[in-house]
Amino acid sequence: MQPLQATPWFDGHDPPAREGPYQRRYPAGPYSCWAQGRWYGDAATPQAAAAARSASRWQHAAWRGVSTPSDAPCAACRGSKLIDLGFDAETGDDLIAACADCDPE
Image: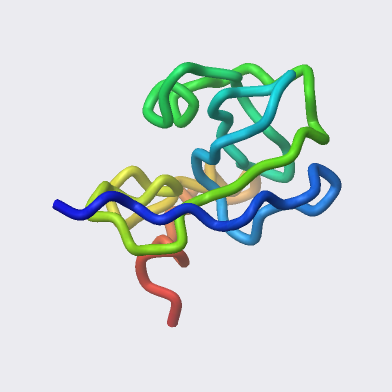
């Protein structure tokens, strides 16, 4: 297995285009997960960052991701290919959609 290639560092005020774990510079990190428009967790591994549910105290630390595809499950849906969007309050229907990161159509 080849090592993953990292992107250059991006300014902390420029958000990533995709949700998922990223490497971050001090004082954040070393890994945090970008989701729902904010950074979550400051963890020792990408897996721990992806599982974090509390917001990072540092929302503007520099970050970088991987520039080569990974065989790891998608960080947005964690490999399920579906995203749970909650439910419709009027009808009570579950709102489940295909993961846009796995199936960009």
